[in-house]
Image (cartoon, rainbow, N blue to C red; front, top):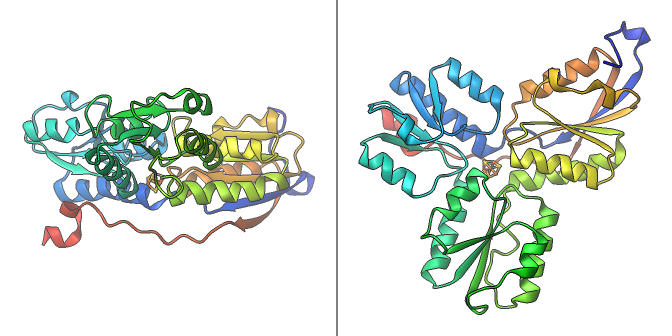
Length: 327
Ligand code: SF4
């Protein structure tokens, strides 16, 4: 460590600029509340397929309350306990398998991911080949690919992919996108597809959700003003990774993605006078506070907030978990 906690008078000053909005989005709140509510309604255990949201702290907290996390349904014994699908969405085969095994399945897929699934199904019914702009292997991409028969949706990850893509019929082509991508990269990829295939059918701009958009816009405002940026979030969180990339591209030389205060590499933050702070959509505010406390132990902090947007999005719980369903 380059610095040890010091008495307030001896601490160097640090201007902290908090990005707003940051942290939990409506889809994440709904997913976590779904597990909490299922635990309250049915009692533990509650099974959850995949990390309910990509944050280890959230997962460990729910585990302590009686949630059991699995990657696939075949890890679950025959049970009456609820089985919850994560916010990222699942291929169609998963609810089908759950039905065959008579599981009480509860779907916590974010409604904005479900919207992309529906778009893909409609485009498929119209006889269009579908390009999915997204990252291979991310559970949301696996879920969207799995809405339709093999080969109906083809993945484009990069600009190079878009430039070399060969459609079956360029007049019967469409695209959808993952919800948590970089706005700028996706715009570039979509523009390349539109240029090559002028008749391609797609969403007005892309399917990137409001939360991803607003968090990236806030980072773009703050990153040029600060010496370093901390993104609170998990390495496997797509929108958190994008926030780190957006910080760097917006001119912030040091951008670090950290899950907890103990993960901060203090060597990177030795000589800074200003720090931007944001958090991915799956990172709870309590972890932002923990990280601010760690900086406050080393620096005399003066904080301000820069806001890119107001958010008031709310998604109701899956129907069986709504209070009126229990009456
Ligand atoms: S990041 Fe966007 S798509 Fe993902 S859960 Fe949040 S609102 Fe939904």
